[in-house]
Image 1 (cartoon, rainbow, N blue to C red):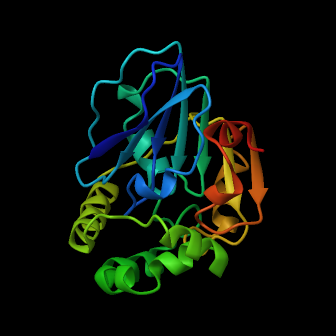
Image 2 (cartoon, one colour):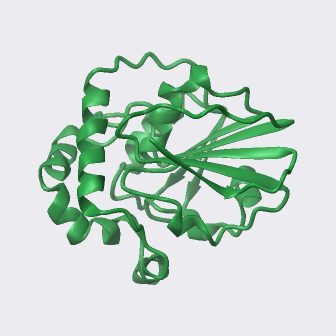
Length: 218
C-alpha cells in the first residue's frame, strides 16, 4: 500500500483519506485544505499502514474500495471524530450490498482493456467531469493497477467481514455505475447514522471545493 501527504502543514486536524482502486493522489490536488492536513492511502495490493502521526483531531474519508480497506485496517487507525464512506461499503463485492459479483468478475478479467478504454469514463456522470479528470489523471501504470485489483480480490475472498458500527455517515451517488446506489442504500440504511444522496457519478469529488466541504457534506 502506498501513501502520500496531500498536505502536511502542522495543522491540528488530520484527514485520512482511503481512495478507490486504481487511483493515486493526482486527481485530488484541486481540493482545498483549509485547516486540515491530509494523508492519503492508495494502491491496496498489500494492505498495511505506516505509523499515523499524532494530531489533536482525526477524520476519516473513504471512497469506493477504500471503504472496505479502511474498515479492514480499523484496529490500526486512530480514533476519529467523523468517519465518512463515499460510494462504497465494507462488502465491496456483493450482489446486494456492493458491486454485483458478475460485473466485478468481468472487470477483473478485462481489467487491462477496461483501464485502456471506458473504465474512467464510467466513473463520471458526464463528459465535463471526465474532461476535468483528464487534466490531472492517474499516473500509475496500467500493469500496476491491474495487479492491485487481483491482489484486492484475493484479500476480499479471504476476509470474512462482520460489520459493526464504524462509519458515521455515507455519501451515495444516485448515478453510480460502479457500485449501484440501490445496493449502497440497502446496506447503509441500517448501518449508519445518516446518508446523503448526490446527483453524481461514482467519482463525486467535483461536487466539493474542499476537504471541509466533504466532511460537512455541503
